[in-house]
Image 1 (tube, rainbow, N blue to C red):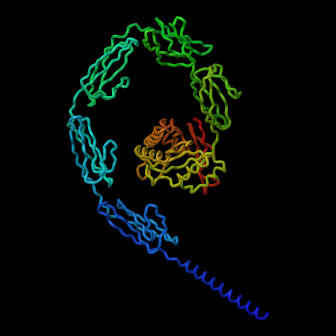
Image 2: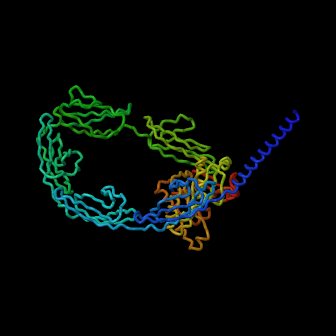
Length: 618
């Protein structure tokens, strides 16, 4: 019996192993089959719909597709995409089958008919309103592009009611985007002129006269001070003084009608008021006194009225000029001009001069004022004997704002901007893709980035400009920009300025905007400009930058060019960038930047790079 149990157990184990093997084999078969997945084959069919002038495009697949195209409609069996095109087009798009295969499909729609609307104009005169209704009638639907006109429900008619004769050409746009000019000529409106009379009503309790201008037809609301009635046929205004003058009203047809206004019933005894001023130097204030020949009403809350009610006084701490009103005992309003000019309420007028030592190791900053200054708390600042000049010597870079005060405490904020030996680089696409984080870590303090070369043609943009400027902005590296000039005349230079303006829009080049003037084969082969022309090219470029709001604008050239080709006082108003690959710069005029080598080595840049020193020695 025990032996029989052992035999049965063995048989069961063998049967289990056979079962597991079959399952494993079937799973392997599925895997092998899954590895041989098919790729969808897609064909495209086109159906033109004449009533809508559109083409329905259907992409038909032999296997199911994934729903990846938002604008197209996928069929329920997931084997067809459809889309209705209202314009001819040709392009390649992708579909994705259920196995993830991406199938490019070429779409070529050519059957949409490019119709153009025919538009005629009809006119209908409305005698009761003296207007003309103009209707523009089209044979096909129009787009709703004319805000003032009303488009019909079938979108084939525009209407507008004209109250004046006019002739002009306007545009309508059909459903296919065609622009159709339409001539409007309204001639049937009758050009009547309004009849106007004036009536007066004296108000004894207020000592005023209400004047009413009455018209037999509607008037335009052109008189801001007067009130126009709801039916637009009456203007009213309340006068508090006698007056006689001619004013104009304008009727609905634009006719200008002169109207005589004659107010003579108001009490002719208004108060006479003069103003006296007393300056108090100890408080730097002015006491203004309005003196009247008759009693005044206490209507001015801020001013003090005297016991006899004939004087108003007020102490001003600031200069001011304005007109205020006082009211006499009869209600007459007397305008009084207040003109306070003796209060010192302005900060000092400040000019700043920078004087660099010859070796550029220190800078004396002179702050010059038009009036006495308060001493600065810091002992480094020295106040002159006349107290109108503050002086300080800097031996390090400075870039900050400070306030200078006059003896009354009025302040003027001024900016200090002192640079010593700031090191930077200038780069273009020729330096390849730069690792700007490494450049910053290497101690580079600024960069001058090429935007491109030549005139305003996008193919002449520097291929690395967008990358270089975005990286500098991301990492907080201050930068300037330059453009290599191929200009042969001022017209070329103006286009090069447009090239620069297009690319730096929205950016902030703190280290200047530069035009690069150099020798090259292009200029030689196409007629090297004269020295005078090069100067005018530089002036044209720089002035266009300044006219567009940029201040730090200048010219790059080597020492030979500065000394011999563009040595003109016309360029002294602009910043100068001198290229002299040497241990010092020997240019004798003022300059802002010195390119001292073309063989610099900076971590993050492959190969040599131009190196520069920046000074603000202007």
